[in-house]
Amino acid sequence: MTDSTAVVNAGANNVPGVEERPTARVVLTSGDDNDADDRDDDETGDAVADGDDEDLLENYPEDTTVSDRSIPSCWPHLAYEESPAQELDLWDMRITSLAPLRLQRFADHLTRLVLRKNLIKELDPEIFQVLTKLEHLDLYDNKIKRVGDALSNLTSLEHLDLSFNILREIPETLSRLTALKIVFFVQNRISHITGLQNLGATLTSLELGANRIRRIEGLDALVNLRELWLGKNKITRIENLDNLRQLTILSLQSNRITKIENLEKLENLEQLLLSHNGIERLEGLEHNTKLKMLDVGSNFIPAIENVSHLTSLEDLWLGGNKIPDLHALEPQLRHISTLETIYLEANPCQRSEGASYMRKIRLALPQLTQIDATYL
Image 1: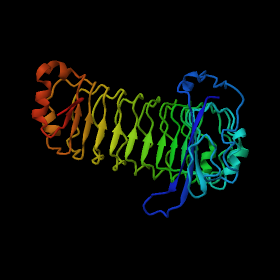
Image 2 (image 1 turned 30 degrees about the vertical axis):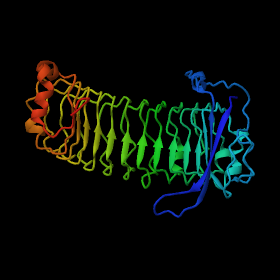
Image 3 (image 1 turned 90 degrees about the horizontal axis):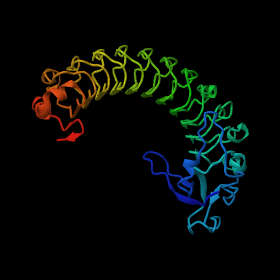
Image 4 (image 1 turned 180 degrees about the vertical axis):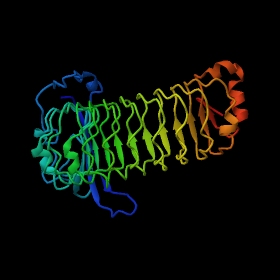
């Protein structure tokens, strides 16, 4: 194994309104910047480690307290009062098995566990089911195919990241994690949205980008959801969102959507991201008057229309469509004083206007501070 660096931070939680408590943190990262290039990304999810796993935390005290007398000699000498170790960050260490780390010994205090960019294929229930104080679990970029019941006891968990693994479905055990607020499943092989029905009281952000989802479904219970990220899937229609009335961000970029529809109930929506689809008309936004950002770039939209009522709009991205001229800019957008940025590049109007393109946009919309990538 390559040399590692260990950082121990001790201090208080400086969160307003929260009682201060002592914390300690251990961070272990690989000393070899090339380790990530050696990772095996085969479709089977198999991984090969350089050698047998070892206990990277062997010098860390059994009683999960850190003090100047317990810091290994390879770490800088730090003197501070003993405090519970609440955070363990183990990044890019080529870990294949968690058993040698004996994480159970930290169960009384551990609230944050980061195991990013390793080679973990399985989650052992005997390890995770005792870590009941965990609030943040990050397993981004491993080789995990299934979760099983390993996380079923983590009822204090608020943040879960299982992005860049090999999951084919949303783990059923999520239904028991009733404190979850933020969940990431980016770049897996998930084809259906299921198993979220018990998370409606707490879940505020759900990220399922870059999967194999074809239909928006299974979200009715998520009445407190504020962010929904479904970009880079195979979704053909905007549907089944009526119950998500607290939603402020909806991302459906890089799908197969041809029409903006079924957004009537999303009156709190502030960001709507629909670039790289097959949308043929700017429409269906009559009730979304709180929109601040609208991205419909790289579609097949032929005209700027049906946006004059969006008087809170700050960013409008229309690049890469089929807009032939700039005639609609003034009647549709000039009165929107909040509008700062507009993208119209890669439309026919840019070619037809030639050198006058930028000047005409500025005359029509003097409130702008940015046109395409140019700051004014």
